[in-house]
Amino acid sequence: MVDKEQIERQLRYAMAEYDVGHRYSKTTIFVTPGNVDPTFSGRAYDGDAWASSRLGQLNTTHIVLHEYLHTRHAFGGASLGEMSWFNEGTTEYMTLRLMLGAETLTPREYNRRLERIAGSRAVLSDRSTWTDRRVPYKRGALFNAHLDQRIRNATDGESTLEDVVAAANAQRGNRFLPSERTVFDIVENGSNAETAAWANDTVDSSQAFGISSIQQKTTPEWEYRLSIAHENMSKKPLFGVFFGFLLGVLVIAIANE
Image: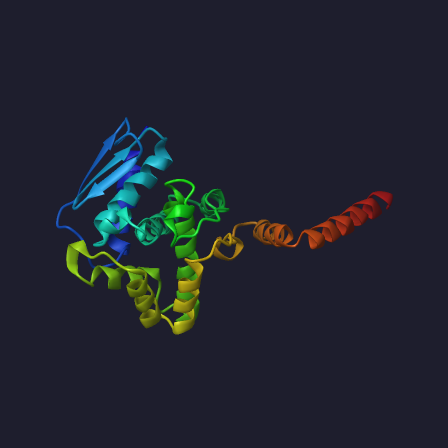
């Protein structure tokens, strides 16, 4: 159930590429065939982490990397409160990015994982709207994906979400518990006021996230373009009906020829 070489390759890549400052001199990760506890597939505490292998090889690598990244974040206590969308959301999104970077996930697989976590309308800042415990992982990851994209656009690629994590790590050592205000101040300092305002408004919103803008381009190019068209049609049903009608006419015309 475990691809040891894949896990080791992925961890080496993350250790080399994930530059957020905080790290332990030694990290031990335990992989078990059962549950880590009754409800979670992974846990991390200080420099140690535990991961379950019961969900298959690729998912085991995903869980191992996710828990390893928690050992690189000095704000782990935020998992317990309203700010878990920041802790779990950044961790889950950066897990996907690092798996893509190490080629553990292909661009198409990366896109599919984004598609699987889309659709939630929970309000990140209001825990009472969370329909299940995976909200900060799923909707939180999409929030952070969009935030990362906005930071990159605002700074012409000079800053990323990784810089936000590094600044949060540098705040108050190993037991820093971030507040929304602190995170948004870090975002503003690292990008601009417009990006921070978007983040502030979006954590209070229930609007579903689109994913076409944060997906990777795939080969062939038409597949990527088709995903954008499909998302646009879902947002504008009348346009979708009109597009479908034109497509039908075109197919009939071709058949007649």
